[in-house]
Each structure stands twice: as structure tokens, then as C-alpha cells.
Image 1 (cartoon, helix red, strand yellow):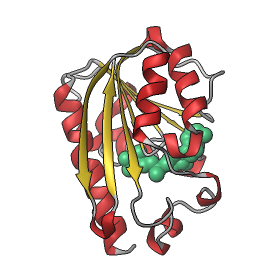
Image 2 (spheres, rainbow, N blue to C red):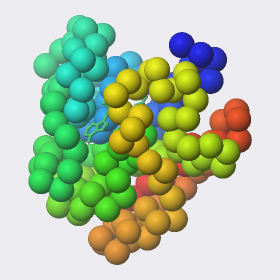
Image 3 (spheres, rainbow, N blue to C red):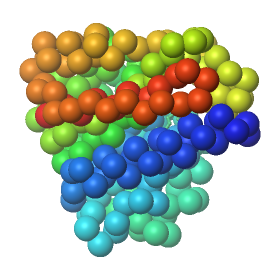
Length: 190
Ligand SMILES: C[S@@+](CC[C@H](N)C(=O)[O-])C[C@H]1O[C@@H](n2cnc3c(N)ncnc32)[C@H](O)[C@@H]1O
């Protein structure tokens, strides 16, 4: 795994820590949970339920192996492709870090709108690419095999506007610079 990939995972983990601290939650959902980066930051004492959603069963198996012991029955791992037909269990906080790129803005917002009553706060991270296309580095491509071809750049302003049109209120936005001119952009909605 290359340095930039490791750095991105560390940055995502740090952002997950901020998301969890900003919105203390009994029930947390994670879309595109992958191998569970940051799930170790969830306090089992103050969190009753954790839902992890991913299209890739291999990633969910990795999550299961890493976090079942710590989270026990709190952990629910669901293999699904996120789209507007999916209905999630109610959560106080829904984390969506680097998943909108795979689902697409329109479908993601339709999913959020269809589940609005089940979502307290939706905190999304997208990658802003000032230099090259998403999943453009060899390190990143090799870490998310098979999915590079279906990811695409997401414009944070377009996402915010579509979320607003769907009835969500923007709570805040932060930008986290990455090496190589890219940045992670976090936007929270209620
Ligand atoms: C870049 S990774 C997410 C990184 C992770 N959230 C983190 O913080 O480290 C994208 C994840 O989304 C999953 N994914 C891609 N398309 C999906 C879809 N349509 N529905 C659900 N999960 C999807 C992939 O399997 C992968 O685990």
C-alpha cells in the first residue's frame, strides 16, 4: 500500500473521529464501510447499534473479523448496493465517506430523500480532485479493485444544492487538504 493511500486512510479515520464526536449517537450507520476504517473509534459504552453497508462481501468479512469481538451484537453488516430502493434502519448519524463517488450524486440524494425519516444527521465526505481523476493513483486503484471504473468526480456544490432541494439543511462544511493537490470535503446535513 502506497504512502498516499495510507495517508488518505489516516485522514478518513481522523474525519470519522470528528464526525462521531460532533454527533454523539446511540445508533450509527456507515455507507461504504469497506474494511471498517474508523469503526474502532466507536465507543461501545455509548453506542447501541452500528450498521455497516457495503456492496463488497469481502470487505464486510474483513469488518466482521476486525470488529465483531469489540462491538458484539451491536454490529450489523449489510451487503447491499446503495440506491434509492434501499431502506435503512433509523440512525442518529449516517456516515458516507467516499461513497457518493460510486453511487452518483443523483442516486445518492434520492437514497437520502427516501430515507430522510431514518437519518438524524448525514455526514458525507467526497474527494475533490484538482489535479487528476478520482481513483487516479496506482495506490488507490489497487486498494479498491474492480470499482475504479465506476467511480466519478463529485462536485461538492452540486451535492449540497441537490441535498437542499431534497429538503436537507446544511449544517457545515470542512475541507481537508491531501498531498498531491487533492482534498477531502466533508459536508453535514440534517
Ligand atoms: C473508497 S471506499 C470507502 C472508504 C471508507 N468509507 C473509509 O472511510 O475508509 C468505497 C466503498 O464503497 C463501496 N461501494 C462502492 N459502490 C457501492 C454501492 N453502490 N453500494 C454500496 N457500497 C458501495 C466499496 O465496496 C468500498 O468499500
